[in-house]
Length: 416
Image 1: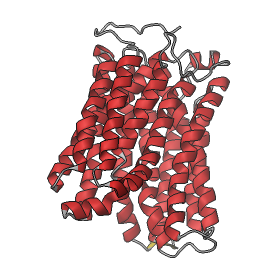
Image 2 (image 1 turned 180 degrees about the vertical axis):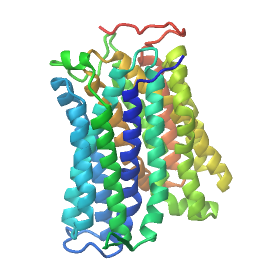
Image 3 (image 1 turned 90 degrees about the horizontal axis):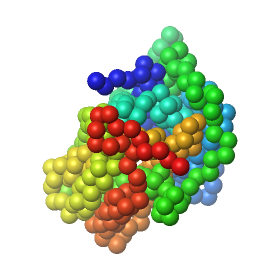
Image 4 (image 1 turned 90 degrees about the vertical axis):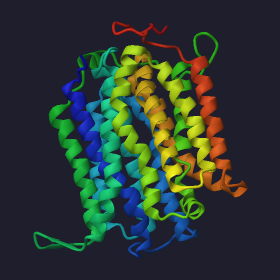
């Protein structure tokens, strides 16, 4: 019988609330900058380049700060306080966008948001890991990811409607569509803050045994690669492969003779499949083991990525993205659960931050890589993505140890 800790469910709902707000900004910020609301020095760069910097700065700062945030959380033995710290930063900075009038202020706000999310993500994942048991960890990770992705998928859909529906008059105050969007994002972060404050607490064992001397390992105990480090590489390759579409949207639409609506469906298809499959696959990994699902997901990622460089119709691209979503669902929850199984007591923040950092880096590198590689041919970015997926499958198969025997009563293999 599958069970989920009430605090894990609260964390999942909280993550969904702030994911809605965060994904709002993906749609709103480029339009906000292009609207003329921002003026001043562009650092000698074109407006489009500054927009790219504003958007990518969040991803890079977020990713590179996560191991530090996880480490601090481990050393203090605290999770909740750092989650709240990050959510407080998000709430304040989302409101700050409404008062930003220059590119400098946008860069500062976006940088602060990257740091805020860097504290929220690894500490939340670590807390989910510590509130679960070996028999429920995969299912708990699946539930958490389901709600997170649901929020991420709903945000962009709602964002356009909120912006286009302005101006608004609320309690005698006039708000533009952009202002309303920024305040909506702030409310999402605030709701998340309140949920964590009221319904979440640190487990006692984390408070009693925070890590003091942990170093990120590249080499494993048997001379190969460390299992968690390998899972980080596989997650990086997966994230790069699924993010290749973003930059080359105009070329895809022209090649397939389709409009933006079709592209939106294709882009969202990956998230939709994730929402449906994350929890059942996570639960299955609790019973049958983690590694088979991860290897299968990366193996499926190879053809589903490669074929996107050769499809000729919109329906074919949609199907490819749906299959890619299946591959992602097979990897995400089992990989987080396996890394959680291997994490030493009190060191979940540092260990799991390797995977969350890798995913963030992959989603930032993917669009940059496709924008560069597509100059050598439309299919090249997808061919490179397929090669990375195959490499990830090989690495996981040969370098990652299993932690759950294929039995409902399995126990993890102890890590030295």
